[in-house]
Amino acid sequence: MLRSWLRGIRLYFYMIGVSITTQLQYRYAFVMNILGWAMTYAGTAITMWVLLYSFGAIEGWSFWELLFLFALSVLSWGVCVVFFFHFRTLDQFIVQGTFDRFLVRPIHPFFHFMSMKFDVGAFGQFLFSVVAVAMAYNRLGLHWNLWQWFVFLGAVIGGTLIQGGLIIAISAMAFWTTRSERFYWVVMWPAKSLMNYPLSIYPRVVQVLVTFILPFAFVNYLPALLLLGKTKGIYPPYWGFFSILVGAVFFWLCFQLWMLGLNKYKSAGS
Image (cartoon, rainbow, N blue to C red; front, side):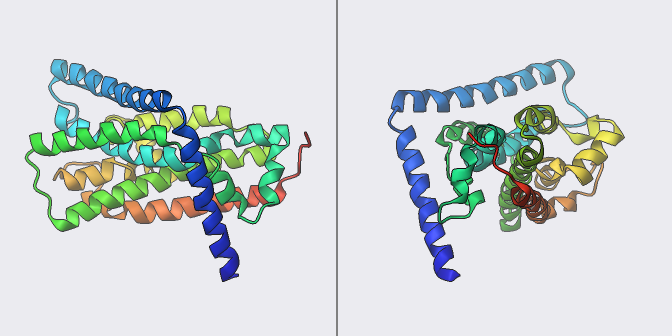
């Protein structure tokens, strides 16, 4: 069993290396992809600045606090895109009958599919989010202790697991319906977009939905309350400590759904 797992891990990293090498063959497209992602999110940040220029603050959140909130979300989303974004296209492999090849190789089908593409273009999101967090940290005069840096790291890891878990759960729908990507655009994108602003501005039903059903509040809002020292939130700031735990549990549940779908999978042929 151990030897099988070690062989699978070696194959996983080998395929990741092949994916990165393939993408680097087109260096101009690679660089432009990174810059494109960075400029896209920078445009959203500018929109926030224009909005705050007119209104001053949103629910007590200044521009730099909003930028930190947004950048924290983008940072974990960038990690998520690197590993899990292509899961949204699982339905295409099932419809075309090409998913079968993931079942006959000496590596777990989940990790095989996961290693199919290592999207280094997402580094543009890292570029934007790191610069934005650094700017907000400086302008807000923050001075974090070691435990606060652990909260920050836990938010990034937990946010990655929460967002990646939802993508995986959505992709699992393809095992039953042979269609899932459209569901991604209906569910994932709106839920992620809600986190660009403080959760307190939304109706109570939305607050409950993105905290206890789809726990996106643990991606950035709750950790930000703790890291920015904001005590007037809709939930206690100390909930931000649990981002990584909530992320791990949510991801495990989504993975179990994916495995359930895999066990029900019947080839569609080619």
